[in-house]
Image (cartoon, rainbow over all chains, first blue to last red; front, side, top):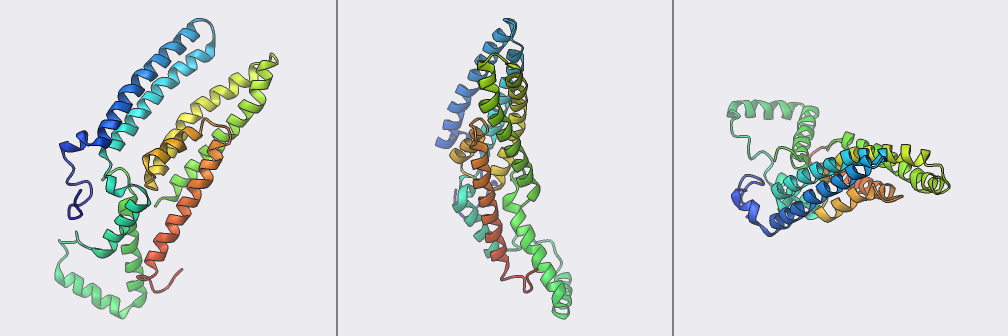
Length: 145
Length: 114
């Protein structure tokens, strides 16, 4: 992914065919039938009289479901945001362009805010703190990318 | 970053770890000796709580941007005796490392540190 595009936005249908994604598809294709087979095996144990088999036959579908969730996130992840390096990249992007998406604020409101902040250093500090918090929260959310 | 995500994971890590240690070091020897009661109850409990552990661990690894291979290790750690405790130590230190880093970055923008 190029550095100019916002993370998550430029992802299109190609994300399903990257090497990463194909590895994930293969893993899922092995994992889910594996869970089905294991579930069937535990149903057999349950039918043979061991009640623990029934419990495990409920758990294996849960593992299959979890594998599917994992696969979905893995395919939709932006590789540039993964790991310590990705986190550092996100933090750098947040500090170099702090209010890039703040386009709809009227100028006079910004001026009034700047005046109020100049008069009240405590307010300025609090606003800077809030800005830092929102900058920090954006990369750490894992759902709405 | 939400602290609740870490707390939820830590609770689940200790719960599954303790249950698995009881299962492996108490339940299984008793089962071999002919008393399967402990193994059945603790095994069932661990099985179901492990699924909760999976979701808590997955959410935390997403929050901390943990790479895939390490994520899988964290998830499997819930099925290895003492594994969840080790994973919990690693992830907690990683969490505090990231918080320290984030607050160090903000120190320039906020004049007064609280």
